[in-house]
Image (cartoon, rainbow, N blue to C red; front, top):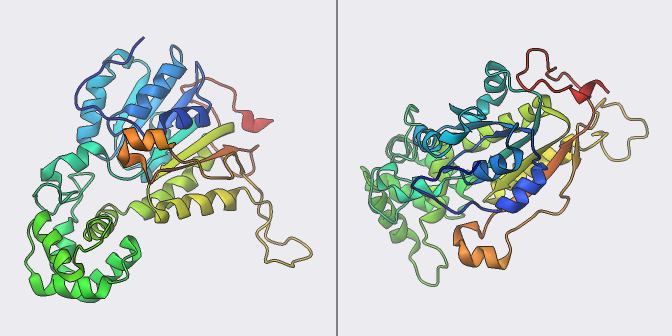
Length: 333
């Protein structure tokens, strides 16, 4: 069965590496935590058909609407949910979708969101300062820009944007209020930093910082990664594609922590922490796009992919009682 195509379309990043990292096979059960425009979802479905099942999650209702149209031929195999992946465990429990063979995260903002001016994610086109993945959210980028104190604004820019001139930028933003559009904000930042010899627009880090803060991206990622441990079956895989250092650091630390058999301080003779490894690192060295992929899809240039595999049961996990997939839970071995 082929995937029904519908516009808009995009080129998924590291799609071959992601699907191979998941070890997607016919009959498998997988969760795509970030459906987006469905590029990775389609690749997984092609591998797991005809008996496989996929649970797709996205906080953006527009992404879910597009996915429902695109994957109409897979209606029996695909369950699509408009929710945050921070609620991963509750979603899988609600749909009795556990244990699973693999879980994929493709983090960051989608091409559709970047290219839609009214969403306010980019300064390439003028639009309102929104930046919400989920329209039901209350906090917007405009709220942060126009109501946060200078100190709190500087913290957001420094912590999430890793911008060393955060205080100067925050001060100028406060003095320029009200700021109502993406281009206006970009111009304010440019007045502070200038553009001479800059490889990227000086507002890029500030827009990223605001987007991360609005959508609680780093907090949600930490919460979701912890939940994958309970949902993966023995030898199930978690694959994460990240696009900046803060995301990758969280993923790297989580996987290394869960792959460690002891967390006691160095030099401790007898282990007292009681920690037992739950994951095995598959990609000890981060996987990056090839030069050919970067040339054909420039938005892939900062992507990093990491893979880990579930070990035998070591803490409370879901059993397959009542589960839809009907497979034996290998955690019992």
